[in-house]
Amino acid sequence: MAEIGTDIAKSAKILREGGIVAIPTETVYGLAGNALDVDAIDQIFSIKNRPSHNPLIIHIGHRQQLLQYVKDIPAQAQILGQHFWPGPLTMILPRKPIIPDVVTSGLTTVAVRMPNHPLTLGLLQSIDFPLAAPSANPFGYISPTAAEHVAAQLGDRIPYILDGGPCTLGLESTIVSFQKDKPALLRYGAITPSEIEEVLGTAIDISTETSPSPLGPGMLPYHYAPGTSIRVVTDLKKSLLNCNEDRTGIIAFSRTHEEIPLTHQIVLSASADLDEAGKRLYHALRLMDKLDLDLILVERLPDQGLGLTMNDRLEKAAAKD
Ligand code: TXA
Ligand code: MG
Image (cartoon, rainbow, N blue to C red; front, side, top):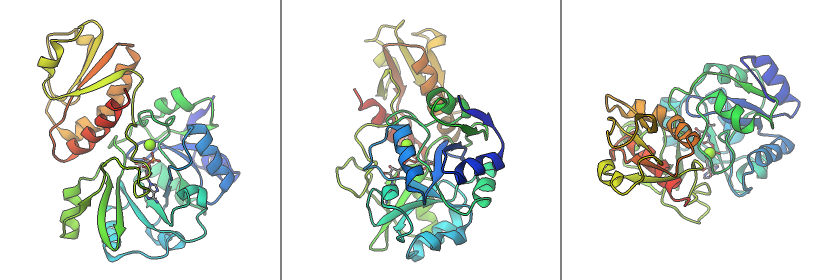
């Protein structure tokens, strides 16, 4: 069973020797290995049971390291890096040959981010290689937002979990690419498109639609799903009319519903705050999944800000059935 602790030196030692460590970030926990070591990358894919055509994000500890791994940084990427790093922004940039093919699934680009978590930044700054880290969940399941989530699912497959407490944002990073120097959003995330547009002063293309094209290799029709069936609904009250109240759980945005037992419901934010809801969503899905119900009804969030990110994840989770 993995040891859980806060020892940066121990994590660094395991990683230097080619091992795998779960690391905390502000978004979700990552399953990290030396991004320059093909064997470590192979282990990541096999521990997660992840298809090899789904490339990984590399994590760096200093902005200045970026040019060691990418050929060119478009002007808009410079601006976004200055503004959002360290933070929940991943940028797709042309890779240098030092990044192995297995990291990028053979693409000519690599996904890079500088995460904002004191333990992981300390770790990254104590090693001389970047960390490739997908979310630390079995492929297709919800991303972990606490060390215990990682321990429960992958604890028997890794030696160490660096425990940085619950993730402060709780939703994955926003992914932006620069095709022909024009920014495009590839994945909704913890930074909203309008925050990016505000910093750049221009509109950004949204190209996150489910597609088999290699532009967004992670854009699978389903993903992020719990084991129990989930349905995303706009009117919880109405949807509950057709459900067996003893076998149905609900995740509501801001208020409880008297139609079903209180033990089967979770309110994401009593004050209807999207940040708070975002931070709690994955944990709520995990808790509901444990109740072993037939169905989880999740109330669709407002289509604005982080609501867009949460609705994106929920639609993918619901598409599994
Ligand atoms: O918040 C996060 O981004 C977390 C933490 C651990 O940093 N990581 C994460 O990684 O969510 P993962 O592997 O679950 O998702 C990475 C996404 C995938 O959808 C993948 O297809 C996309 O990044 N990606 C990676 N490299 C890419 C590339 N060169 N071009 C386009 N998309 C890429
Ligand atoms: Mg993931």
